[in-house]
Structures are given as C-alpha cells and as structure tokens.
Length: 247
Image (cartoon, rainbow, N blue to C red; front, side):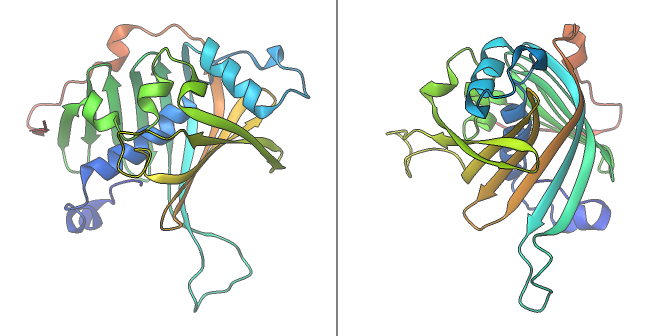
C-alpha cells in the first residue's frame, strides 16, 4: 500500500498508480484519525465498538507515532510455521484535525509526507524531490476518509462488529454498508478493515485486500485534543522540486 519504494526501486515502480498509494495511506491514517478522547472516560468492560463510536463523536485533534508493516503469507518454499512475513516496514509521525486535515509523515527508512489541507491531497517525496497535488474529494472517494473526517455518524456507513480479543486489544470490524451506486456494492478496496482498541485508545489498524495482502499499523505516544494552528497543514514545495498537479 502501501508505499512507494525508495531510490532505484522507486524509479522502477514509478508506474505504480498514485491512486493505490493514496487510497491505502489515507485509509490507514483516516481510519485511525478520529480517536481523540480521554481513555479514562471508558470503563474496562466497554465494548470496542462503543469506544469507537465515542471516539468518532468526540475527536477533534491528535498527534502521535506510527509503525506501518506490509505483510504476506509465506511462500511454498519458505517456513510455514512463522506466520506472516514482514515485507516492508515504515515509521513516523501522524497528526490530524477534523474535518479533513491530516499529515502522515513517514520518517524511516525514507522521508515522505502525505498531507491533506481540507481541499487537496499532497504527496511529498524527498528522495525524488517531487510533490504531487490532487483534489481531496476524488482521492478520498474510495476510502473511509469522507466518513471519518466528516460530521456524519459512523454507523451510517459501516456496521461495527465486535470481534475477538487479540494481542491485548479489543478488535472491531468496520463492515461497509452497501452503496447502490458502487459497482461491487461499496467503493472500498479492502475485504476487511479492523481496529484494535486497548485501554480506551486505538492501538492498531489491520487492512486486508482481496489478494490477501495485509497492512498492519500500530500507534503509540498519542496526544489527544491538542491545539493545532491552521498553518500546520500548509505545504509549499521547496525551490527546484518537480510539481505534478492531477485532476
């Protein structure tokens, strides 16, 4: 998803559709973005689904660290007893302000930023010295972004299904409700979207697509409902950078 490979790998994969990157990256960030409410407000026994609903209702801003892993099942010639294999891992910082503003700042192993300022999505790649701009509405149409950054109820668009407790988290599945205008019933590229809640905070997001590819995002050091200046989401490409504008 999930990301654009670096250096020579990045150049070889330059044909990878930007839409795929934006869809996955924004889905990961925005699906987690609404979670900005004090964990002390939740009783230990409260279901993950109800915690998620309260986060969506009460979230304003948040900032924290993330680690993102792309996983796959072992191949036939690989050991079958070690579970999913990590094929790519990135980490960095995230920040959001509802509705419609966020920064997904990848810092390791390369520097790349995905920025939404409320009107457009900007992908900045430091290694390529390239900034790509596109309208936010089009780029976010195939993700939960429009719902989770908007003011509508999460239950209008998803069935929230409590799952099993796993890895010390209460997992909640977000099952898209059918969209009669979508070709396959809904516009999302994933067969499964799950959020892991622990102690009143979102700790993980798990995305699975139709090919069985898994993206796992874990969050840490979350600061809730912080004051953010509007300029925090302003991005101006440095002099000499290549700028692409997509309609």
